[in-house]
Image (cartoon, rainbow, N blue to C red; front, side, top):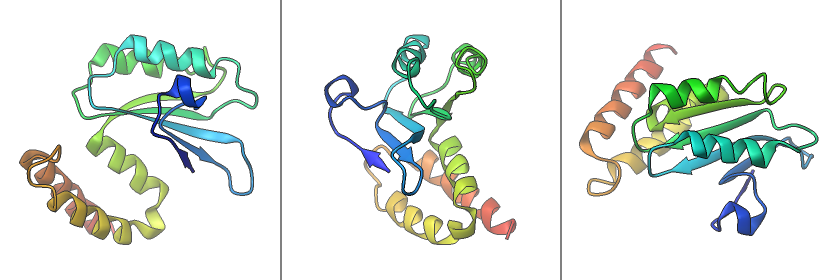
Length: 146
């Protein structure tokens, strides 16, 4: 996994976090974090960044702390054919946790314990009370699946 703190254009990165295969430099998934609403322009910039990738990136996922417009979500989902198989998705924070838990399902209890400690330790930050409650509801649902 590779991350960076500079703008994508400055760093040459595709997004904020790039996930590579083990023992390989091939980027398979890109995560782009936004503390604002994701727009069609954001998606179009991502398309421009990944257009010439060889080998192709499998997934480009936006994570936003803001709401998601249905038209933007549909625009992202409609790019699969245009990109020859790159999935583009826009997730809110809870949607991302669900996505991530699917990836790490064998180790999800350890992840949930650590994440819960972080979420509950942030009473005055971006993790507001409704988000904390949503996380705890998600946690409860994950534990009932075990």
